[in-house]
Length: 155
Image (cartoon, rainbow, N blue to C red; front, side):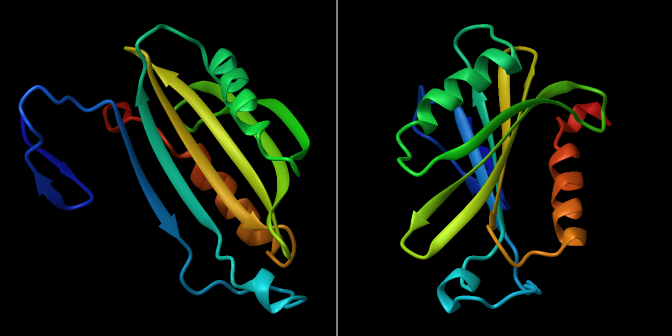
C-alpha cells in the first residue's frame, strides 16, 4: 500500500505497514530577545510531532512514564515535571517539561505533550527551545501549537 507523507509519495515494500511516523518543524526567522552566546542563538525552536502505533493498550500517563525512563540517559536532565494537559479537542493528555544541556554552551527547555487515541495510537509533540532568549509571546504560541495536535478526524 502506498502512502503520502509531507507531500512525498512512496511505495513501501510488500508486507510493510506504518508503525511510526514523524515530522519536524523548525522556526525560520526567530526573534531571540537575548544574544548572550552566539552558539546558543544558533539553536532554533523546533517542533517534532510523532505518532506511534502501539502493540499494547496504554494511557497517556503510562506512556509518559516510559518516555521519562528513556530520557534518563540525558546526564544533564533537570527539573523534570509531569502535569495533566488538555488538547483543544478536549482529549486529556500529559505534559512533560524539563531542561538539559544538549552540548557545551547549548542549554534547552523541552516540552512534550502526549495523547493516546484509539486504537492505541500515541501522539507526541516535542517542542525544543533555547533556555534563554525566547519571548513570552513566542512561548505561549508554542504552547497553543502543542495543544492543537489532534487526529484529523477530530475536526
